[in-house]
Structure formats: structure tokens, C-alpha cells
Amino acid sequence: MAGIDYTAAEINIRQCFSFTKKAMAEVLEKVKENPEVKGCVILSTCNRMEIWLSLKDGADIDLPRYICDIKRMDSTAYGKYLKVREGKEAVRHLFFLSAGMKSQIVGEDQILTQVKEAAAFSREQECMDHVLEVLFRMAVTAGKQVKTEVPMDKANFSAAHQAIHFLKEHGIELTGKKALVIGNGEMGKITAQALMEEGADVTVTVRQYRSGVVNIPQGAKRMNYGERYQYIPECDVIFSATASPNFTITKERLENCLPEKQQIYVDLAVPRDMEESIEELTNIQMYDMDSFHVEEKSQRMKAQYHQAEEILKKHIQAFYDWQESRDLVPRIQEIGLASGEDACWRMEKELKELALSEEEKDRLRGKIKQATGKVVDKLLFTLRDQVDTDMLRQCIEVMEQVYEEK
Image 1 (spheres, rainbow, N blue to C red):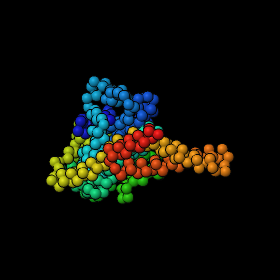
Image 2 (cartoon, rainbow, N blue to C red):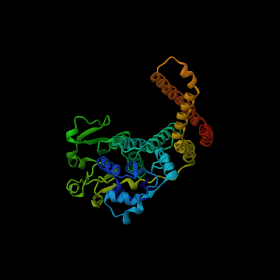
Image 3 (cartoon, one colour):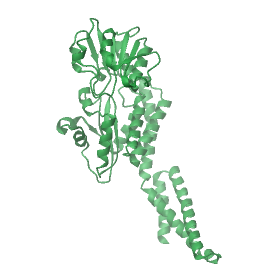
Image 4 (tube, rainbow, N blue to C red):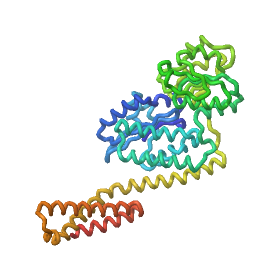
């Protein structure tokens, strides 16, 4: 995998690598045409973008260059921002990522859903191979266990919660303030709910053609997206959290409707929703995703992190065990076939004595082979789940020697 996140680059760089769903679908279609690639998953969130590839044996892809080519960017200038991980390092990264251990807000819940949705989208686009399927499924399962058993101090926090926490720490109270939330997707709804919990008077924009079907948090008002600039002069805080490829707030439109009072603008989108130059306007304080820094972990959080790490290590080892035993599957199946042949050979005398036609005897031989093979397969696959890989290999080698001698 190769990716970029909030630790590697500021938002102006990160937004160059972000993907809309439409763009992801187009990339996955192109990836499927590459004979070296068996599967691909793209994860694109407000704080990170990652592309995961499952490659055929011997394949060698310069992933940073590959990604820059997809984005039509100069790999010399931009490739340096992409962190490449392979093998066990990549596996560990995904498990810790899914559990929220790599998030800007440690333990946050959204990333688990985002990882799950990224895998589902790849599956829908028929770009998920068996290895990535198992890897992502096991990572999500591990993340769920961490969420259930390790209540992190900042669990359930989102970027919106962190932004609000940041504002309050800087003396900006939201109780009784008029707030406009641009965007009614998942992040917009979380933002609106979080602001209402602080006592703000919240209005959410809704696209006019969707206004009859879009749900917004109970207690929030709604207004048509196209009327946002008329309402902005009344607002104290304006949040924007959309997946729009275009700016939701521009300097040119905004400077014609600004009130005399101080206003707070918070951009929770990547790519940016708000034109960066609006902070040049009078009475505006503007914040983006890079404004909200998380403090050092407390001793309690460090203990929680260690507890989560122990859970994740077990799930990671389970994935390695599965991966290491994959090559044994065809060998187990071969032993099953050989055992069926052996059983048939041992029963040949009894078969000849049966008052059956040759056609009926052949059908019976086939059924004996099939049934015996299934029994042996079941025994060996059960053994695979009960013993370590080395013990399983020894058992299979012994059985292979038995049938080689015959």
C-alpha cells in the first residue's frame, strides 16, 4: 500500500490525493486492466488517502509513481509525500488504522466505518481479491473488538467534535450562537448534532432538488443550499463538511455579505470546501483540519492504547496463520483425492461381488472416492484450525509420503 495522511503533509497537499466515489470507480476500472494486479482497495477520508494492491508473484509496481500518474501529478514533486508499506508492515498498519489507533483523534469511530465501506466499494466494483477480502474483513473484526473492549478517552469523537473542543479551549462559546452547517452527509449530520449538543441554534443546508428526502438531525433547521449566502450574515459560526469538488464558500461571494461582527469559519472537508483566501477578509477567523492538534497522550490513554495493541496483535497473528497455511489448501485437497482412490482400491474385491452393472459400479466407485475425500478433507481442515502451521505441515508431509509410497 501507499498513502498520505495528516502526519505527512498539510491539507493543501493531502487534498491533491483525495478521491470522490466517482473517481475511485474510474481508477478501479483501470486497475483491473493491469495484469500484475489481483485486487485493489482505495481509502479516501478527510485525513488520509491510501491505495492497497494485491499483486501477482513477481510483480513490481512503483506505487508512488503509479498513484501520481493516476492523479496526473509530477511524481518527483509529489511522490515523496506517499508512505509505502509492504508485507507485515502493511498488515499491522491496516489493523491499527481500523481500530482508530492511527487517527488524529485516537480511538475515533469513523475510521472503522470508512475502512469497511472502502472494502465494500471495491467489492461492488469487482476489484477485491481473496487476500484483500480476508485482510480487510479481519482488520474490521479486530477494530470492532477494540471498540467494544477498550473505551478510549476520546472514543466517539469525530473531526467535528475535535473542532468544537478546540474552539471552546480557545474561549469560543457556542451556546445560543447561530450556526450554519453546509453539507448533510454523514459528517454534516455529526457536525450539526455536536453543535446542538453545545446549545447552538443550528441550520443545515440541503440541496433544493433533494430537500424532500434528506433527513437532518432532529432539532436542526433546514434551508436550501443556494440560499446560504443570504443567511451567513446572521451566523456566528459556519461549518462546511461536504464531498463537493467545488468550493462551498468563496471569497468573492462572501465579501459582499459579511456583517460587522466577528465570525468563525471551520472547514472540515478534504479537498477544501472554503476558499483559503477568505481568511484575508475582516472579522473572519478560519480553521481547517490541520488546526486541531491532539495533545500528548495521558497515562490512562497510554494504558488503553497498550490494551488495544494486545488485542490487535492476536488478530494480526490470526491473519498470518491464515496466510501461511494458504499454500496447504491444494495439498490437503490432493490428499483427499488420493485417499478416495485408496478407499476404492481397497474395496474393489467387494465391488466385483455386487450384483450391479459395470455402469452402476463405476457410479458407486465415484461416490466412494468423493465421500472418502470429503471426510479426509474435513479432518485436515479441522486440524488446520486447531494446531499451529508447523504441526499441520508435518501432518500433511506424513500423509503425502503415505500416498507417494502407494
